[in-house]
Image (tube, rainbow, N blue to C red):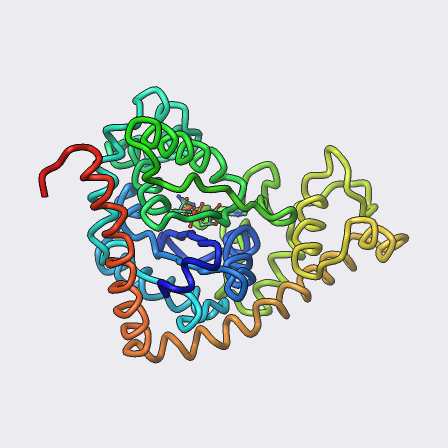
Amino acid sequence: MEQQTEKKKIVFSAIQPSGTITLGNYLGAVKNWVAMQDEFNCIYALADLHTITVRQEPAQFRKNIIDAYASILACGIDAEKSLFFMQSHVTTHAQLAWLLNCYTQFGELSRMTQFKDKSAKHADNVNAGLFTYPALMAADILLYQADMVPVGADQKQHLELTRNIAERFNGLYGNVFKVPEPYIPKNGARVMSLQDPTKKMSKSDENVNACVTLMDSPETIMKKFKRAVTDSEAKVRYAEGKDGINNLMTIYSAVTGLTFEQIEKDFDGKGYGDFKTAVGEAVVEELRPVRERYDKYIADKSYMQECYRKADEIAQKFSQRTLDKAMKKIGFVK
Ligand code: ATP
Ligand code: LTN
């Protein structure tokens, strides 16, 4: 691990166990996590500390954590190649988050669109954690001296803030943190709701038809795509004002690797029915092995426990060095 760290660039990312993982999470983030494993030194976390910024029912939360861990392994994260740990098991995250809170401005946090969206959505629980969430996310990333952070487009603003915090801290104390670069896919960075394609596809959408999850059966996936909102032009082309078709083309392109021009050519003269079927089938095939592997992992909790225990321990050691350095620079006594 340490030797690899010297050679390969470090990749860090995380996902919240806040519900069933969606096609948006997969195409925007996790598919890239998988693709980056051979070339880079990859470190991934299940961001369970982040999840309690929205109230969780304990039994359901516990289940979601285990389900999400199994799902990410099922997507193709290989515990032999990458570190995949539980954020709450590694004590340095909450510790560095506290320090970084003191180097993050109220005004900066107030401008975060995720905070504005989530506080509108959960108006009865606008807690301090929801507000300071980006400082914890910055801690996650900066602890591992990450070079690159593969995320969907909605996280770009948090990444910018992370870079600002790192630069501010380094400006005061010298080079403590690596300033990370976002890694946002060209296609699939923002998968939209199938029912309202002006809104992002989200785990927590009340309309079940809006969102495809990794655990949906092939029949359910086909049904959701067939019901997807489109327009009345009946021509498969990428253009302004065609949000529904643009979204389906984005999904199809992210899954098959075809360009928009190729897709337009292939579906020239065909109706939306044919196109929706093709998109549905491509997604079914992409997710089929994921579901099969999920069944295997979820039935073997002791294997998963072995994976995260090993990863937790390595993450703790690795991140402790950065935390110690930051604390020493600030002036804490050892
Ligand atoms: P919630 O709905 O609970 O806010 P979420 O799905 O938006 O959750 P995370 O689970 O934390 O948020 O996201 C994990 C990763 O998936 C992040 O990198 C995020 O950018 C990406 N992501 C989330 N939604 C989409 C989407 N609709 N399209 C592309 N990427 C997405
Ligand atoms: N904030 C992210 C999840 C997340 C994350 C991270 C992503 C928590 N820590 C560190 C990248 C790097 C989200 O809500 N989508």
